[in-house]
Structures are given as structure tokens and as C-alpha cells.
Length: 277
Image 1 (cartoon, one colour):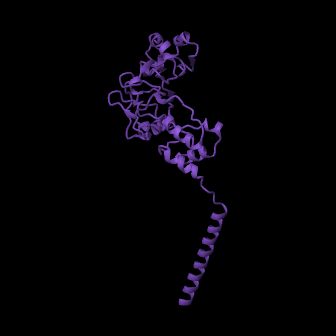
Image 2 (spheres, one colour; image 1 turned 45 degrees about the vertical axis):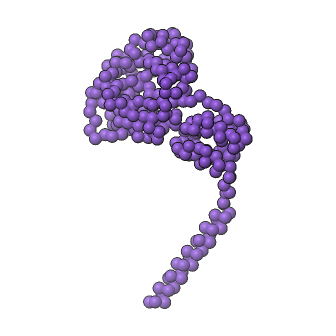
Image 3 (cartoon, helix red, strand yellow; image 1 turned 30 degrees about the vertical axis):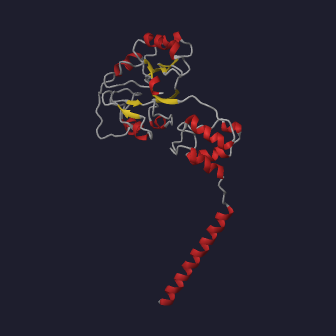
């Protein structure tokens, strides 16, 4: 009995030793030496690991910077750290940093409790994604905000909160880093990343409802009805699927007030966040 036990222990020990040796030699063969430059770059990054740069995280972004050429570096950008951080990275690489316009998330919905009253009550549903799969929503707008705050939960920078009066999310542009987490999580695609204008003004359609006019307004009184009046003011504005879209390069300074006045439902809004920038 004792002999058998000792034999089993020796066999298992031998297998473990062989496995350890195999792993050792494999690790040596496939070992990739870390670029010391990527470690230096990672130290100047904000460490948010948000993926806004298109990479898996700050470490992956640092590796991409360390191995890129001048042309490739121009396409790499950390929106969280902004121009200041990218200048530090450029200094380490001996490249020239490319300045980019700060961006922010914008909610393309104005379905507040006043504009879009609650018609259905959710029971024990705490996720926008789940609600979107099983229901048209509390307001019966198939494209409107579900008001359950998935976007708030994924924002790492505290730039989103649910307004207790309107029941829809609000973006704090002074905190928003344009990481895009809210864009990815919203099941109805209500968030868009837009550049901040130098004068702080922005004009856009705060609606994503693609229903026809009368039905859209039944669910929300400030819904876009696709009338096309805005597109007659500026030819950059297009109306598709009963919904108008104002590109970010349409000047709010030049067209903003005229567009707001022309919209018969109030779906077009103009904001001025100069103090927050």
C-alpha cells in the first residue's frame, strides 16, 4: 500500500516537472520583449481603459504608439487625455502632435415626461437593453429614450445623469470625454459623438423617431415629422425615413436660430455650452 502510494506520488511529481519544463521552454521561445518606450507612454496616459481610441485599453494604445511611424501616429488619439496627453506622447516619440477638436456626446431625443408622457409602466425591468427587447417603451415611441439609465451606468467619468424632472439623461460636457461608451450601450442608438464648436453653440435634431408625422407626434409632441422645412434652409440637411438630420458641420451661428424657428414641432434645438468648455 505504501509502495503504491509512493509510486503514484513520484509519477505525478514527474508529470508536473515535465509540464513545468515544457512551459518554461515554450515561454522562452515565444517571449516577446516589452518595448520600454510603450511603458513610458502608458505612464502618461490617463489610465481610463475606455476604448475610445479604438484599442483594447491604454496598454494596447501605448504599444500602438510605440510601434507606429509618423503617418500612423496622426491617426492615433486619446480623447480622454486630449491634446495635452497626445503632446506628451509625441514628445516621447519625437513626433509632432496633431491637435483635434474636442468632442462630446449628444442625446438625439427630447422625450421628456412632459413631451412624451408615460403610457406603460415597467415592472421590475432595470435595463434599457432588456426593455428594448420586450417592449416598445413607456412612452410607446419605438425610437425614444427608455429612461432606465444604461448609459449612466457605463459612463466612467460621471458625465451622465438622469434628470429627475425630465426622466431622460443629461450630458455634462465639462466631464464628457467622448469615449463613446454611451453610444455603444444605448440599444436605440440615441447618442452621437459631435465636435464642440469654438463658440459653444450646437444645433441638431433632438429626435430619432422614424414614424410618420401624426403617429410620431402622438407619442411625443416634439417629434420630428420629416416635413423638410429645415432642408430648405440648408442643403446639407437631409430627411430620410421621416426623420431630419442636421450634420455637425452645419453652422449653428449661421443657421441655428432660423432652423429652430422653422421647425413646426420644436424637434430642432440649439444649445450654447460655452461656459462648460
